[in-house]
Image 1 (cartoon, rainbow, N blue to C red):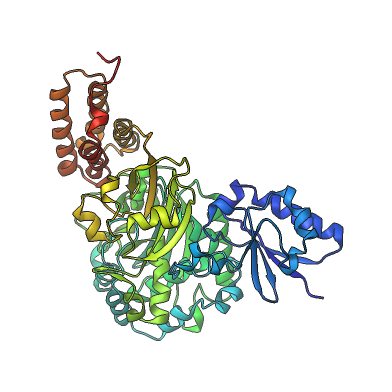
Image 2 (cartoon, rainbow, N blue to C red; image 1 turned 90 degrees about the vertical axis):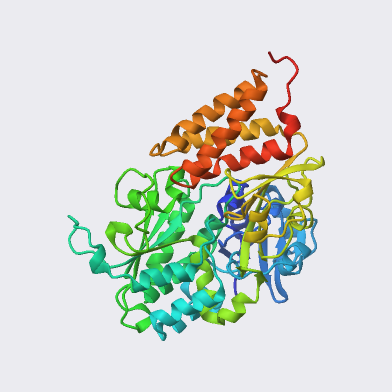
Length: 528
């Protein structure tokens, strides 16, 4: 009799909730009962309230149980869960769950389904079909396909990916040479921004831990498209599990001939390396990231020149986010029209949306653009965990605007969010119930900027510190009217005078808190 496959996630969230202990308990119980099992450490399906989620491959399909604690394992074996037996923790087939069934999983199609490190498993589930197609195309045709698909950067800025790649493709590396003590260098580079530092965001981490070969394939396609031979994944140091998964996946891809000097037997050369950041939020900004990669202190560069023309080591460089690269294989596999048919307006394709904060069902879903914020909060998030009304939602990380209930029908679309003074950013959504103090949230935005500023420009470096002081005076009811006006003027200066988005976007949560939750800025009992 062949071993029964049991899937237990090795995703960081699942591990934090006890998945490693659960996996050991299953292995121990199987050994004690003389049952042969094969433990597959997969990625998370994204239903964090059910982690550790255990799936069993039965003749009738995969059956899920969760959340499974070590103490539950004996009763699961007694209930014959290896054959899908009934148990209080039995969920059934994940794909049939209402929460899962309504999604459109393109980037995350394999996450939670396959062994993340197995090239054979990856290929069996559609992997490398996009790269195979790309290897038979010209660079210009690859770029045209990405452009026609309407893919925009998923890191927050939403800049059209095809335009960026075409700039790198057309750039003359000889005009951007920079002397290097390292000897001959590649003429162009591919850089993945995996410095996922926004609060409430974790899609990059989940993809890198749950399907790292997808990212590697996307970067390889980019290299073939623009003529680059070297790629770097700039990974935040707080992601040790992703680092191990990426390094193992890169080694496996090289061994299988999908990286190196003869990619897929094409004679084309592309290598990928993982480089760790040092914990600076500002290195999520692409030019600070490049300085850090070059071994310098991460500080914002003046633009122009753009990185696409003079980037890493002075060479043309295509910098994209993890999800941007992970979207590329599906475009080259299924075609630009297939991808473009998802979404609304100028927001095409799908967006991995991360639900966090005060919600019953936190985790990751992937939806086509066009779903409303209200649907995400209630149909998927299940409303607040506390049972109190959801008062505010911050979308797009710590620099995103706070939206009140009156804006919950806003459609997830880059332009729709911009129209209400907000941004989608990296797709992270953090919910707050009616116990939240919005003045304190506004103060936190200024404090975050003060701590994370690279210090290069005065509006960000000094303005954020002064912002904390002004908000504290408002809270203490000291010359309230004067300080409210001063705060407005300060936000205006930071927005228009900062060198990068850190200082430029910090006013958004402050101004939105003042606009929609003005009562929290009123005089308080016991203040001067």
